[in-house]
Length: 230
View (cartoon, rainbow, N blue to C red):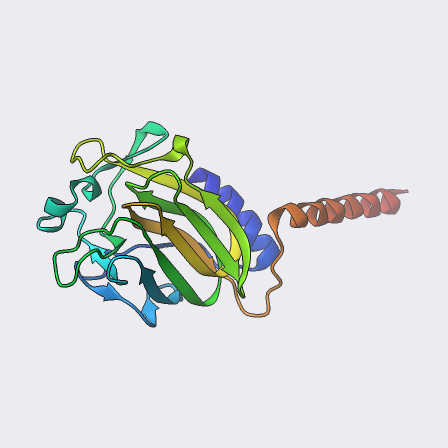
C-alpha cells in the first residue's frame, strides 16, 4: 500500500484524480449477475458483461459452500503468487459463469468487461487462480492504453485444490481509461481492483510524460529564486 500512496499522490497532482477506491464484490449477493449500470460506490459505475461459458458475470462466494465445493481454488485465503509472505482474503469475487442454471462455477476461459461511465486512474488489480496466458487490458475511448500479461512467473493457478490458493497482482500505475477487459485463458476470477475517478475536463497526463513537466517547473522555480537573490 505504501507504494500506491506515493504514486497515487503524484497521479493526483498531475491529473486531479480523486482518492483511490477499492472496487470489490462484497456488497453483492453470491450468485448475483452483474450487468448494466452496476454501481460499485465512490462514483464508479460500469456496464459489466462476460464472454465465455453462458456469458454471465456472476458473483462468487469465496467463503462458503456451495460455491467453493465446485471451485475450491477460489476459496479464501490467497497467497501472492510471487511472495509467499503476502496473504490476504477477498470478500467475494467475479467469475465468468460456466453453467446456467447452476451454482456459481467459473468457466474454462472467457472474459469480463467493464465499460465505465467515467475515466478512471487504475492501479492494482487482483486476479485469483489465473493461468499464464491470461491478460488485463485498459482502453480509453476504444484505444488500448495498457495491457498487462499474466506470465509464467505470475501464474496463480493451483489446479482446483483448496490449499495454497494464490492471487496474481498486476499494477497499472495510474494509467487512465474507461474500459477494462479481464481475459482468462482458462479458469480464474477477479478479486478486486483499485481505481480513482478522474474528474471531467481533466487532461490525462501519463506519468512518464508528466515527470519532465514537474522537473522543468521545479527548475524554473529555482532559477527565479537565484535571480531574485542576485
